[in-house]
Structure formats: C-alpha cells, structure tokens
Image 1 (cartoon, helix red, strand yellow):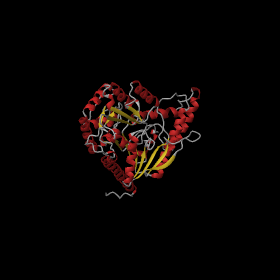
Image 2: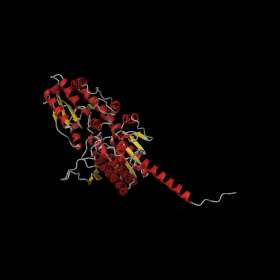
Image 3: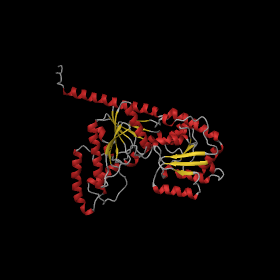
Image 4: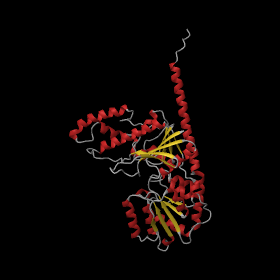
Length: 455
C-alpha cells in the first residue's frame, strides 16, 4: 500500500511519545514493504536570514519526510490585527501543499496522527477524493482545535470572508475582497465554510481517549482501540533479580517538563520525606519544557535543599532512554492531564522498573492491567509515603516491577500493536477497492443500452 502519514512533528524534531510512536509506525510499515511518505511541519529546521522557514524533504531511517507545513497557535486574537490574513494565507498554502503531494504520490490511505497546531482545512479532503483516511488518536487536539463539526475553523474563515477582522471603516471593502477570495478558493476544491471531518475509521490509543471524544460530541461511526505499544527488544531487561544499589532508590523522570506533567509533585514529595530517608533516594530528570516552569522547579529544589538528590540532565535522545531506565528502580508518573496511553510508563515497565502513577487518563488502563500503585494527582504527601515504604521494602519494588514487565510484554508490545494496525489498514484499503469496483461496475451498467422490455 501507499500510505501518506500527516503529523505535526516528526523525529528528530519532536516533543514526546505521540511523535516517537508515529515514527516507529512509519518505519515498521516501510519495513513491511509499504510505500510510506510523511508530511509534517518545518518545526526544528533553521530559519533563513530573512526569518522564514527553510522547508525541506529528507530521508529519516528510510522514510521520506516532507517538512513543509506551518504550525499555528489556535488562540483568540484581536479582530483588527492583520494576523488574521497572514494566518489564512499560510493555512491555504499548507492545504495546497497537501493537495499537491496527494496528486503526485496518489496514496491508497491517508493516515492522520497529531494535527495539533496544523491546518485542519486538510481533513475534509480525502473523503471527497474517495481516498480512505484513518486517524490515530492519543491526544485531545481534535477536541481543542476542531470540535464536532469544525466550528472553530468555520468561525475563523467566515470572519475572514465576511470582512469582520479588520478596522471597522475598512470592513465593507474587506468583505468584498474576502468573498471574491473565497470564490477563488472554492474553485480549487478547498472547503471554505463547512469542514465536515468524516474519516473512514478512527483508532484510539485507549478506551479513555475514545470516551473523552464521545463526551465532546466526537463519536465516529467506525472506531476501535489499539493500545500503543513499545518495541520490546529496545527496552527489555529481566526484572527478576533485585537491581537496587545498596541504600539507594533511583528514580527517573522522563519526558516533557510542564505543569500538567506534574514533576512539581515529585519534588514536593522529596521535600516531605524524613531527612533520614531522603538520602536513600535520587531523582534524575531528563526532558525539556517552558523556561519559567523549569526555573520554578529548580528554585524549589534549592529551597528544599534537595540539590544532592535531584539532578536535571536536560533532554535526552530517545535511544538513550533504555539505559536510563535500566539503571533506575522506580519510575514516578505524576501526570495530571488527560493522557492517551503513556509510552514512558510502558518503556520503564519493559526495562524492569517499578512504576507509580496518578492513573490520569489512559494511564489508568495500564495501571489497572498491571496493578500498579496509585497516588492522587498533585498529592505530594501521599507520594512521599509511598516512596518511603518502597525504600524500606525492596521486595515490593521487585514484585511491582516483575508484574509490570509481564503485562507490558503481553498487552503493550509494539509487535502486537503493529499486527493489529496493519490489519486495520489492509481492511480499509480492501474495502475501498471493493467499493471502487462496485461503483465502476454500476456506472458501466448504467451506460449500456437497455434491452427492450417484453410486452
């Protein structure tokens, strides 16, 4: 099959697990013999001397990646600013880029990944072209930036076409120009006011994520749950023998460092530990995030005098994470946001770490399957008690780790995920072929001369 993957970010330029998994899937599909292309943003590429993006196409681990799209911040802006028309021109350029790539590549399937910050005006097009499209959802971008029927998108474009975005005195002229512009865009086949997103199929990474979308009014006729998997070979380390360094419980934090990820809860928990217990734990923080939040965390570490047991080591490449997990004992996953299915938790479980979690969002499905210890969101006292207990009961650390690794291998492996994902893609492709053949046969039948009716 020829598969076009569309995603906001793609390694090596990425934020977190959603993009990492996208790349892993694209490379696996290519290894299985499929022709895979990726269309993504120019995020991470250097700017030209004029401050414009240097777009490029490159090969990443055998996959052709087109880094051509803009990214946007979907927040209300003052109506009089020219920002409105600048964004419109960029979004339309991105839709044309998508159209051009589809016409040249002629994919059998369009596979949407994270569209957070990308133009959503692309979404209605594959069904119009009768190309099956499928979403892989492990984030709430569609709820926040699209809605049940693209209402936010419609409001933006309607204001542009109807001249409601500039100085009041100029709005009659802007309205005339906007509606003429809209007619030109419509002739290109690009939607201008209605943005019905009717994908052939939607795959959610957890049952929680599907329920979240249903509650927001996004219930799709065809959907399924495919748990996001982790390549076992890259992370697996036998968890049976206790690996604890004498007198130390080594705790990693990996991923994005932001308020909703909850690292502050772990630091506060260290502050609540008995001074005699605290030296028996160490926290290694790998990741990056907003500078103000990082500054606040580091200041809090100094206030609590945790400098000897908390280390910030910056963002690590994803291929360095297996070693970090293998040299650790307990992963704390303190997220307070609506998680899809946290890749970090499964990676650590495969590597033999015990995992503690808030169970936020889809993290609860992993926690329930592996019977992981839970602590309430932002409850530093409860987490400190849990950590203190594990310091004095190393056998419990080993038990949690062994059970977690067994469940990770059984339910959350990458091979299991890819087997189901590839089956889904083939089913969608074969269904589209059958429907196309039926439509051609019907058209052919309709064009034949009718036999005279018997009288």
